[in-house]
Length: 121
Image (cartoon, rainbow, N blue to C red; front, side):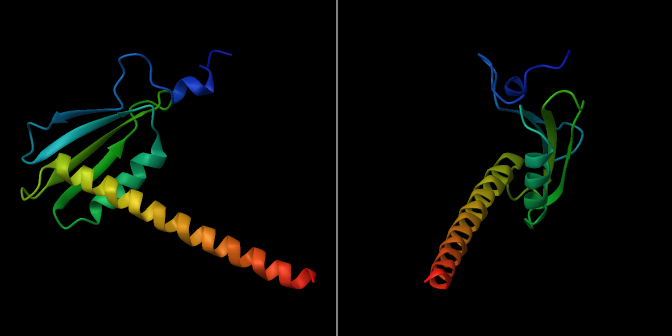
């Protein structure tokens, strides 16, 4: 009843940015990225990918409030790369992983269709 329409949770409004970046002043080589109109799915995916990098010392995310589709991702590096560069590389890695998953899924789907076609004959 009071809840916003589902599409409003994920469509950006006029002048809204998808990601904002704030350097962390209390910790060296750290930053906080706020993702707008996203949820745990992307937050956990990026956190896990960042932790696989040898240059990332810390990566974690939190959802400030469950009714608002935003999360904050905190990244700390060893100084050899900036947090922004580490996040960019993590995003590229995730896209590559998803492309590989899509290719493998399509290949298996086609093989399944071929196998089922042989049984029908």
